[in-house]
Image 1 (cartoon, rainbow, N blue to C red):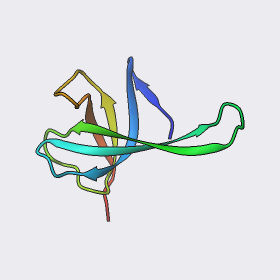
Image 2 (spheres, rainbow, N blue to C red):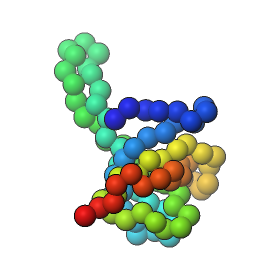
Image 3 (cartoon, rainbow, N blue to C red):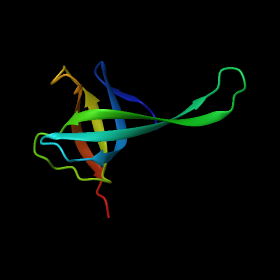
Length: 87
């Protein structure tokens, strides 16, 4: 997973793990990091609350998200597009 940018905003790709809320999905982004001393690579996961205006996303979908202004107490991301639908 590589972090990209649109203008000066971060763009990430992740998997929807919850769509129980209205107009909000929880997305899990997995990244691979390297230990600063031992150089062993390990996976880290982070959860983001993402604004989904049309409630398009379902659990298991791979989506692209972009940073945006604060939309609520926890939401700072919005859905750009659905990369792959869940089977």
